[in-house]
Each structure stands twice: as structure tokens, then as C-alpha cells.
Image 1 (cartoon, rainbow over the protein chains, first blue to last red):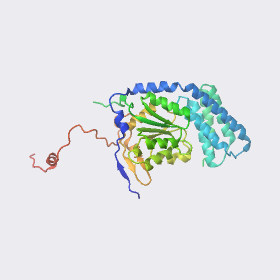
Image 2 (tube, rainbow over the protein chains, first blue to last red):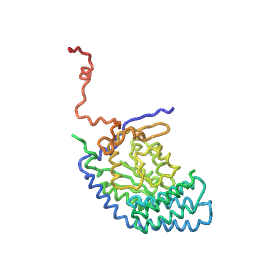
Image 3 (cartoon, chains in turn orange, green):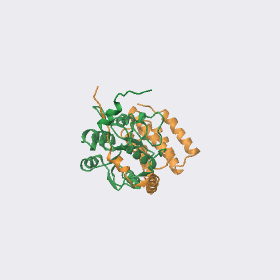
Image 4 (cartoon, chains in turn yellow, brown):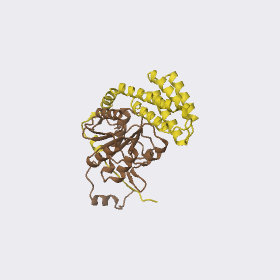
Length: 157
Length: 199
């Protein structure tokens, strides 16, 4: 068994934050939210471009059957870039659908089995959700429910 | 007097924060958030190699790094900082940010020694809460062959004293700051000296 050493560390950050001055917590949150909001349009345009790229990877690879090759990691990377950006805003169903795409592609890569139809339904759902302004509602819930069913059938490593 | 659930003020004006993300848009958004928090000294880097160089040359108070950095990822960067840098650099608080945690990375996330792993979706409020947690972090630092970083048994301690989310059974090593001068040895001796009492 290894010998563990435990001790207290008081970081300079902790001392600085307790110093007088600074901002009210609610003001800090408000100012940060306002500053973040200025990026929204740019981010949504980037998300749309990532969806175009996903469609292109799908179109190029759909004939390959269970051999995804480089397309698998590329799909994961693009889906991951969507949740990295969309995750800063309340994009509800869009975030959830992109997360599901990350999840299924990660599992298929790990299992060595690739199913293009699983990717196709995710891309279609993402398109519809984006076109609907990422609003949560009956339509988005039906789409997400479908994705959950598909995800349950996706092999795990 | 009841303690407030969260501190009313936060002072990050003198703090130097390193933000690391390979996605320039994501890096800009993080920067905007920390500007809103009142951080004046931000260092932004788009690669882990550049972040390593900064760690070796600048005094930093907080590091935020994306998990899925290419080449050396956020987990490996954290592990490197905790194990390969001298004190007090190795104790620098690190918040890891992740969107999707790939199955193959779950154990790396647990074992790398980060102060917190924050998953998206991420709001400024959630991020500020985590930064505030760091101010009252009561966890001990652990160093052994297999792990270097804050004690991972946070479940037993819960959030720091005074923060939202503490439960009745949460433990605490919190004793507060000293408010009086230390007692001298004779006073301590008197307190533990056996004395006859009349009942």
C-alpha cells in the first residue's frame, strides 16, 4: 500500500476573493451573462456550419456499412464541437440531441461497430431542432424521445 | 446570526486566471464570463503546450482548461501540473470544463487531480458558484504514488460552510480564523490540571 500525505493548502485565490471590494455576486453574474449573450448569434452560425460539415461526412461515408474508418472520430469531433459551444447557452433540445450524437458515436467507435442510420436520425433531428429555434416543446420532445430509443439500441463496448 | 447561503461579494480584481481552450470561440466566451466576474488579468491560450510554458513562467491563481484539448488533453495537463511542477505551483486550483465525457476518459477525469470538473451546459452562475466553492474549499491536499490533488471524497464534506447545498450529515474540518491571541502554556496546563471539586 502506498503512503499518502495529506495537508491543508490555502490558495492565494481564496485569500484574494475574501478581500474587501470586488463585485456583488449578483452583479458579477449579470455582467457575465450580458457579456456572454453578445456571442450568441456568432455561436449559432458556427453550430449551423458544424451541422453542414456533419452532413458532408455522412454523405461521404454512408455507403461504407459498418466500417466507419476516419469518419467515426470526425463525427464525434464535430458533435463535440456543437455541445462545446451550444453548452454556454440555453439551447435545450439542440444540446441534448448533439450530446446523444456524441454518446452513440463514442460507443460505436469503442465497440468497433458503426451504424450510419443512427447517425442519420441524429442529423435530421438536429436540423429540425435548429430550424425550430431550439425551443423545447412537443415536437422537440418527440424527436428526443426517438433519439433515446435509437441510443438504447446502440452497442456498448 | 445565520450565515448567508453564499458570500455577497466576490473579489477577483487581483487574481490572474489562465484560460485554455483550443476552440477560439469557446475561449472568447470564457474570457467574457471572467471579465464579467471582474478578473482583470486573463491569460488566454489555445494549446496545452503554450499553457505549460505560462505555468512555468507566471504566477497563476486559477486555471480553467477544456478537457478535450488535442495532443496533451486537459486531464494530462492537470496530472502534469500536480506531479511535475514544484510547490506552490502544483497546488494551483484547476477547473476542468467538458462537454461530452468519452467513456475512455472517465477514469482520467477522476484521477488527474483537478479541483472541479464542470460539465456543460454551463451558465455564468454555475461557474461562479464553483469559483466561490474554491474560496471555502476545506478539502485536504493528497499526495501519494497513485494520486496528487484535492481529496476526492467531497461527498463526505459537501459544499464549503455557508454555501448552498450543505446537508445535515456533511462533515467539516472548518474551525474558522483565530479571533484571539494564542494561550500560553501555563494557561493550557491550568485547564487540564486535575483539581478537587466540591459537588
